[in-house]
Image (cartoon, rainbow, N blue to C red):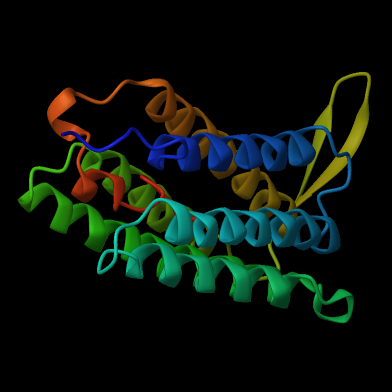
Length: 211
């Protein structure tokens, strides 16, 4: 007799992560303030809720012996979110240190899980590699921003404005969140093949993340 279908699957994890990433992207996009305080506040909420979703996945989705990716990513997200949530620490330097460290750690974990999944013919491996790659790309982009970067630019009939490193950094975080929302949303709504509905497939993490 075949096992009953699960009410909560890895696809639900993907869709929840996509939803929270979309919220973070919208908060950055529609905020006129791209300061370190706002960027870290948005990142803190995004990382903490993503960590909670992954912890939920470890409990409800992953099979025994396959929970470590969920747990490890949940810990990385939770710790980064808590550090970013301390108001006194919300400086420009802290933004880059926390977000870059988080992006590298979570991205590497996702890529490792994706590579292991590819060897096991896991249909979710591609999503994991993609989201892990986005995390590494975010870290690389933030590292390329020069310390203390500032440049003035003029818009006709609007005036002169200043573009700074933190504005670029917060904007890149918003762009990353938007891409994660799109890719995980697509993955979450894409039906798995019948041969993919296995414990091994359900054990895969966020199917994607850094987040």
